[in-house]
Image (cartoon, rainbow, N blue to C red; front, side, top):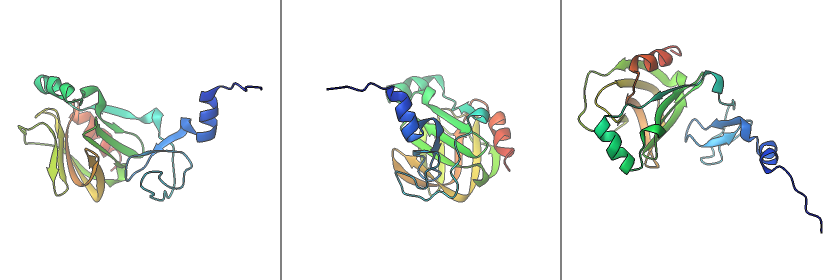
Length: 179
């Protein structure tokens, strides 16, 4: 009996296109570049484009010190909470509690929030959602058409997203460059 040994990683990359992953704009599930439909939600892609890693900017979600300690106990570490912007998409994630991916073209306005909410975490209603680890650095992002987000895995509608980030001015500038 002959056993053929191969480099599993390179076979996997060749067979699946692993090195060219993209993200579904509806459900944020990863799929290979060139795929015609999302493997999770079945949405048909008009044009699939590999993620633009060269121009991707990541903005950490801001956490108050006390909430950072509490969130780690709830498995919501600040290290896995961020807003990512590339030339085509915006991805927002707060560990397992919230995720969303939508086209930059859906951003119609960006403004720094005047309110300082007392609450922390992920909460909202009727399309208006707050994703924060701090009452400071809140950026208000208005979206048209409505986009999809997921709170603890359940789909929600996004019309307005308020997110606390460490550099709100820099994120606002990155998002406005697409307007």
